[in-house]
Length: 153
Image (cartoon, rainbow, N blue to C red; front, side, top):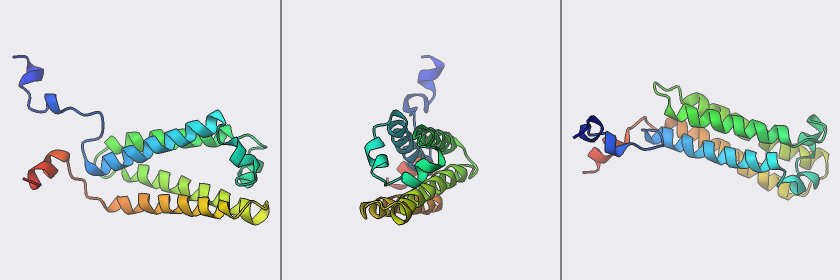
């Protein structure tokens, strides 16, 4: 029997982080990367041109790709932070929550200053809730999946 087969953790290796708190951050990071990829590729441009995020577009002189890139960078940071221990993952949660709040602010400013439809406020509320969920997840204790399995037996 090889060393990899004899080691008890070798057959239980997972691609996601070993703690529940890290897994939640890992999933949020992938969601950010998907949203950023869609923004970067321009598939959300019709929503941007209807005035929802007109305020945000004035900051980049009409280009939407910088926002997609920021989403991808924050998502990647969140995924990497999900693997970190000793409460270093809190920086991933904070970065994602801050960017969610800023994105919600862009929707509100579009509604207030650029005559965006009232649905922009609904989008802002969704992003604020996303940010609140991320900040609430900071209270999840760092419990390894193996410890969680032992508790449920």
